[in-house]
Length: 172
View 1 (tube, helix red, strand yellow):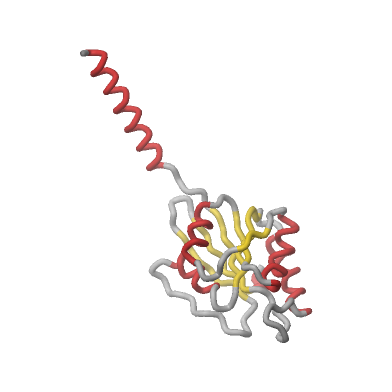
View 2 (cartoon, helix red, strand yellow):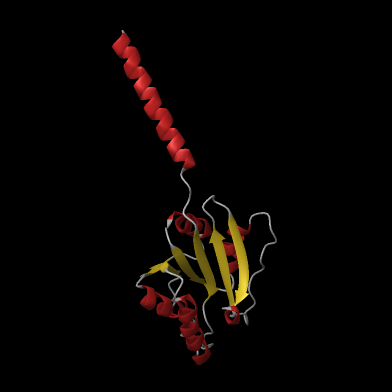
């Protein structure tokens, strides 16, 4: 009988310690950079970047080259992939496609990933993504068609909190 009681006590202690350990595990802090694709040509359904857009994509690569980017997400369009390419090439992170209509899925994936992340989206999707991380703060509106100059910096701390800053490319 004493062996059974001892065995139950040991099992109880192991389960209690495992539960406490899982509850005290901190989320790794990380930064998610969210941008709209760079300037595009206006003539096609899935256009390439314009000369100005190509220059902006190079600038984005320069801005993020020392940010230890480990993941790059882009919708599956020519302009978003071209915007992400310089960061991908420098960091060695492959460009992973995501569905712009499935914001919840992307947010969950971003939370799971370790390291700093770049997400390239569209004028009508970027605000959905960053507003997930704003919490009760002021929500960001949809970007205007002429707005290409913003980099949203989403900081996730090790306690699960988040902060969103909207910066201009020239701020870096």
